[in-house]
Length: 177
Image (cartoon, rainbow, N blue to C red; front, top):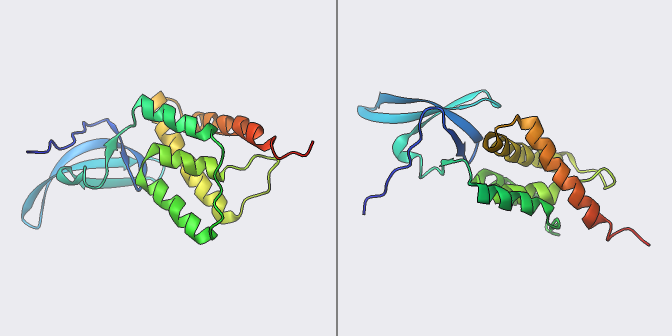
């Protein structure tokens, strides 16, 4: 059974799990160590980074096309859910959050954003919590922006708006009558 390799065209937006949304800017053929390799050349504008991925390794590193509309809806619904705050040590939670972000899975990233969001009336986050929140929110916003063909700040504002509305619902439970 031959597995069909993923194929991306020049101009396609793709998601590379460790770096988020990039764009295929060219297909290259290079000779490396005496072997002919075909490479996707990806450009990540936000990081000002170019990455070359062998076409035969694209699937194994987790490179994928943008999420489906169904997955995007599921991720946005996840943002509306009740935040889950685990009582484990921060270092363990931070590791878990980082691995969810680097998984490239939109719904997992949305869970991190939801769990680390703090409304204006909530206690402030630590520096490391804020860093992880911003990384996850940015990753989610970039994919949302690419899918809805809007700019990243507009996508981020849409995400924050959903979070603020759901925080108002979930936090009113805590307010003494």
